[in-house]
Structures are given as structure tokens and as C-alpha cells.
Image (cartoon, rainbow, N blue to C red; front, top):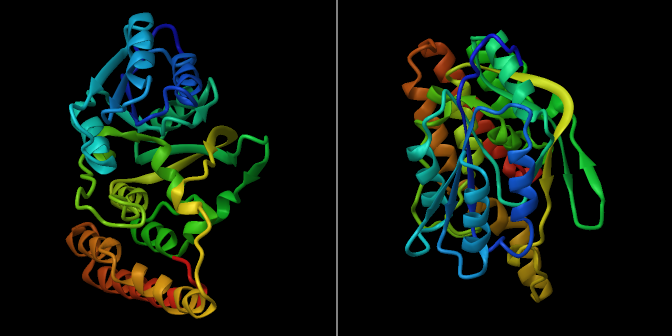
Length: 297
């Protein structure tokens, strides 16, 4: 970074729950070791009953840039994300899960792209998913990073991308404050998983109405793939398995509020013409229907 220019403040939000004994230290180390130094690091602990509080307070004593917020009771994952949005003070904002790792230059290089491109809302690097056995899965940026500069074309491109290709990962990039902070995570207790209704893609879609996405073509973000209770095998009869696979899995997603929240964003986007809004609504309907033959959005 230039020595003669004051760095803008970047808020880094870390929601956490019960990671103190496993991955939290590695995540915090990767944030604290960033080459971009002007950070405020906000940890929102969702009333973890394990040693997470001890770990967070240890890091807060060691690094004055860390602010530790502990919930009195578990308020749910989306409400915990909302706390980070309310507490952030920076010009730029990013959030990362409590088990992910960012390379030392991740924030510096993303901020540089945003500084060089004032029309952009977010900057994200290339990324991989990894597990505890050292296996990594890469993603094709052309399939998950919207490259269009025109507003209508950008939103259309993002709508038509597939979730399974990594389009949701843009959420973890560095955002301009005005593009990400206004997003409010839905705190209603939706199942599968509880409290998370494609909130990542909803945030990205709203943010893309504010500006383009800049891409750093280096692998600087490492998303940990951690098995959860939702990944556990479930013992079902053959009829139930067929019903779940062919019918229920599609209908369950079709009637989630996600699609309808996206429709609301499209309708309220005044920078789009009426024709462009109508086209995007049709593309949104197309993706809803795509569930029935692709089983993917």
C-alpha cells in the first residue's frame, strides 16, 4: 500500500459459534496477519458454550483492532450476521465464517481493485473449498463471478448462474459499505438449515444493484467444507427417497421466500427500465422452473 495515503477502514465481521476448540484460531490468525492494516475486526459470538469466549478474549487482548461481542443467548445465525452489519464502521466491509482462511494479501488486493474502480460494489478473489484431509475443489470464475458492467446484463448473468458453481461465494468478498451494510438477514426460523434461506445469494444480488464485481484472479480465499448434521445420512425407504429426490426437494426450494425477495429487489430497482425489470422477473421465473429438471438454482 502507498505510504503517503491513509488507508480506508475495512470492517471484518466474524460470526462464530462453538469454534473455539477447532478452527477459530486459524481464521483469526489469517485476518490479523493481513498486509492491509487498517482493520476493525468484529467477532459476534452467538453465546457459545465451549471455549470460544476464552479464545476471543485472548485475541482481543492481543490485537486492539478486535471488538468482541458476545450474545447473552443464542439469537440464531442470521440475527448474529445482522449484529455485524449494525456494528461495522468501515468504508469497506467483509465477513468471513469462523472456519475459513484468507491469504495475507486478500484484503489489500481487493481494496486496491475497489479503489481503482469506483463503479464497483465488491471485489472478490478466486477461491477454493478445502477439507481437513487436504482435498481442494476449485471453481470456474466464468461460472460464478458476474463480469458484466451494465446493470441489467449483470443481474441477468447472476440470476442464470448456478448455486453449485459457487455464485454464493461472492458474499465473502470486500464490499463498499453502502452496497452490503443495508442488507438485513431474514431472522425468521426457516428450516434446512434453520435461519438461512439463501441469504448469501440475496445479499449478493442486492449488492450487485449498487455496482459491478471486480475479480482478483489469484486464489486468496479458502472456504472450509465442514460436514454438518445436515450432511448426515438419513435412513429412508426407497419410496420416500424417490419422493424426496423427484418432488419434495424441488417444491421445498420453490416455495422459499428467496425467489420472492429477489423479485422485490428487481421491482424496486429504479435504475432499471420497466422493460428490463419485466425481463429480469421472467428470468427469475425461469430459474424457479429450472428446479424441476436441474434440481439446482
